[in-house]
Image (cartoon, rainbow, N blue to C red; front, side, top):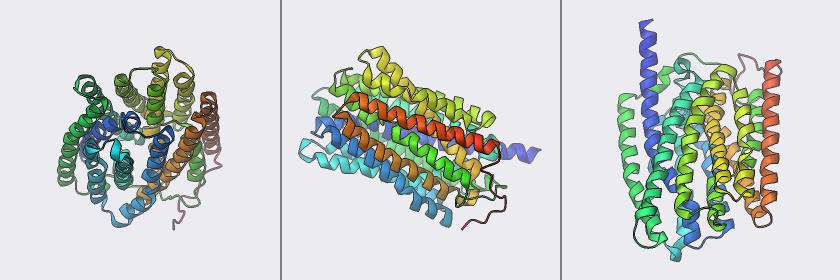
Length: 409
């Protein structure tokens, strides 16, 4: 019993290491992300350029996870992928401090590179987190990691809010100062990452038993990919929301990162709630969360009052928290450990491609009709929830079960 307790304690401490790495990294890139939309607008980018950057960034940041996930599984070099990915993901952000209107295209390149860095490290990070699930529960493991992750995502935009509110000079110079200051936490993240690697060189040893199941010919995995594709299609990214709020003067620009910080705080609480709920009732927890979150678009885009907008962003945070915890926990429960980084790569690539297509549609519809944006978002989310419900029903009735000894190519 003692070795089991010791392993559980070590798994929890390792998860805390990953959580604090996520806290610092999200402090950096979510702080930056909270002002991507307004920054691009200040240096001359159009609404379509903002939507394109947001959508294409998510696409490449997700599509590249297939090869990076395969590399992580084939080589077992999870830590190398983490260090390389985080370095690219974070160190490009302070470089945005040197971009102005004369070279606004460079800002787009840097923002896209930030997403590439995340693509390199994300499958390895998800796999490392999943290895602790036998001791902590998949839902709780991803929820704890996400909660610390989102604490950083709350504090980063708060710093940006303070900088924008107190910095002297133009709005553009205030944005550039914020990007520069975020470079400090970028460096701290990399230092903590190296320390974690030294203490836990082989975290895959936490999971000694695993299901013998992969993703090829796995009907659970396939149906799940269909469901999350529709969820991604209809979920509107925050830079588009920020651009809308700034363009329509619904809220002062200085409060936009503060609003994002609020959403990240809700995200953290949502992750803990629905992650714990997942361990009790399974994927039905995600069905509940996305049913609530789909109402965010009407409140953000169709109402002018600040209370309605804040409520809409809070609902958006609920959806993000559930996505970041439960979506990943499901993969850990249906795919074996040896194929998990690859499965996460496929999962994220499918999700990112759908997110990209959805962002392009939203960008095009935005210039035509806000009601059309909301209708598209609601339609896609409803279809996604229906497929999730079908997944629950099929699994309950044994229709999506695969053989325990299925051979994975």
